[in-house]
Image (cartoon, rainbow, N blue to C red):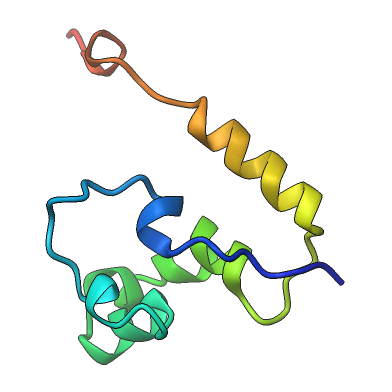
Length: 89
């Protein structure tokens, strides 16, 4: 079995630092637990189940520290520009 990721969820997800978030107020509580307590749509729609944060920080991670680091490096390099987001009909 692998190790757990030490980064907080807002760093893993690349959240805007200026935004207020319940996870930042309660950094010791997993974000998926906060979402459950708040009946947040992400928990209700089971988005948290497959979320990269839960995969990296969950109790039963099968990923090694090296695999976690590799995922985070790949994720950091995966950004879309506004041109790539444009859809034409």
